Image (cartoon, rainbow, N blue to C red; front, side):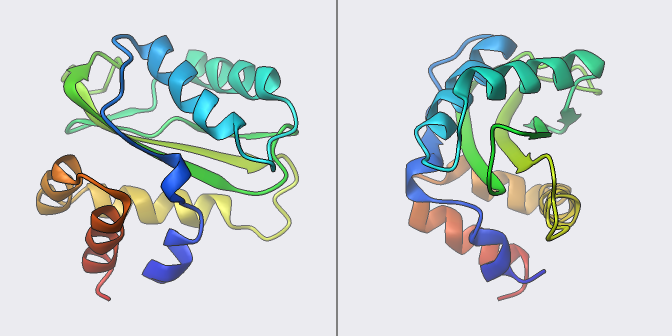
Length: 156
């Protein structure tokens, strides 16, 4: 999966530089509201319920300051990603017990015929496993800068 393919799931409308939320549930709600503004989301309430249910199975806080809440939902007609940064950090029950500052919310259709959800999740995990990429993502001020970080991380 190339950088441009990864970036096709993102949009300036789904870029949050400075989450207002102060709790895990607040992050899920705030990011879901941004995603719900997209025409490809049929039922915002169902979307949030799915994300909360997925999170109740086990935290998507990977550690190293990153959380990637994700799931499949009948509320989504296409795979979409919201990127967000929290300047203060939020307790997200991460595996390393550190606060999370970088968030990706990935939502895919329940029927993922293109088989894009898991490869996309894998590429994002691959990127954020690198400390230099995490530092750059935390520092981005705008969507254009975010795109450049992704291109650099994926060698383009």
